[in-house]
Length: 384
Image (cartoon, rainbow, N blue to C red; front, side, top):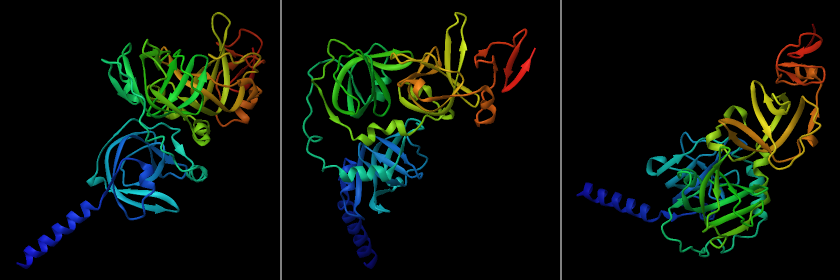
């Protein structure tokens, strides 16, 4: 009898605990709960970030520190049900996840610039007015029949090229606009090409847009169709912190995943700008670091002329793309204004990453050792 009563008591406590779990579907709601609240959080393609001090954040547009997720990396996407407890850590909202009781899926690969300065984010968030009801307002709906719906940019990128589909935004951000190209990132990057949509840098997009899955120079694109319209999505101005986000976290050459990040707006730091001439005498620029070299192109009318080569560049903004399976960088700013010309000898004496090769005395790279005269090889002068 005593064992039966004990069993009933345990069952009652378990039912009470289950009943006391708060079911929510946004991180903003989670952040508003008091500490020690048991939470059941439904996440749908939320993003995993890493803080500058190595901790893990979860974001659906609003961020929270998390513990309990195993083997995750910044830049991955998570969907499913997370069970855990709301806590605080050093003044930051914290969600301690019980992975054994949760049911979730993690997709994607690490993107090297998904890092968040938590202090700056929290400070900026505290200065904002409380969120209004606009996120809860019903979004405009299209009545176009027979089209597949892609839940997020990654899903749209997975469609066969030439497919007309409905892209459902998930608070995706406009990062850069150049010519007829609009570069947008959500759970993956994409370029809207010649769509005629009136967007500006910093817009957050909610709702849907219809377009055709395309590909240009290895960049996944959304092209206009007869059904493309701005009637079915809304734009909100993004926090300036997020607008600057990509600029503050450089591309890591060693972690380059062109298939995952093609079309991304990136910052490349601390490289040597070098050049080669092709058979037509046209000079090609390269960003060089250690043994890695990425060609630099200019699709948006920026001035690449009269650059003394080689030169050192502290930081440059670019679009990452591929051409004939070759990763390349498309400049977003005037390279001439942000580089420091170098003497050949400085490549070996002042820079930790020496660019090897054969050069003439003007710093131009040669394809072979000249038959006579002076030349420079691997930072040393020679006479033949």
